[in-house]
Image (cartoon, rainbow, N blue to C red; front, side, top):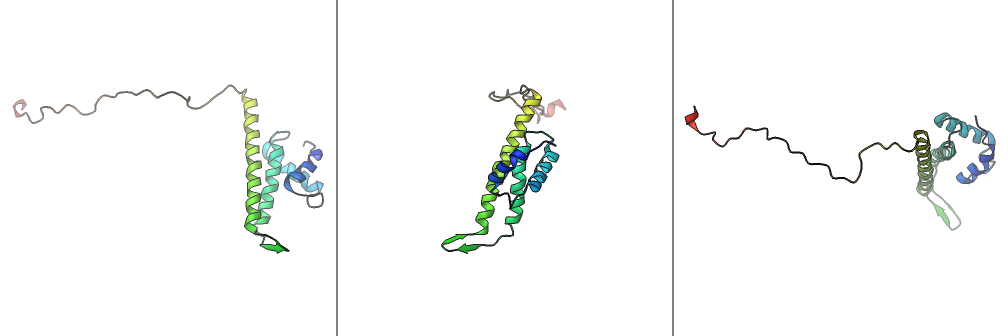
Length: 141
């Protein structure tokens, strides 16, 4: 396992936690889960750890209720929507890191799929039905 102790403060700041709400053992467990999913030392671990934290926060936010304090009011749906947007953002960064890692492994030269920018050739096929120009001709018997 790679040592991610230097990343714990950035994990906390990216996810809105403090050292009290996300202690070091829990942060280490998050990085361990990310490494188990994506491999030890993978560049995908960094955004994947943040995505895992947001998934946990989304699970907790589903249980929230609306609250009002002084002149400020926030509904539970706003909290859930904001957390969902952050989870999507880190999920996209994880996908980008996975794609970059795949490009490095494959050398970046392989391109699969259909080439873009050409008009497909039209092919003429023979007519499957025989000509019927004299189908009522009785003399042919």
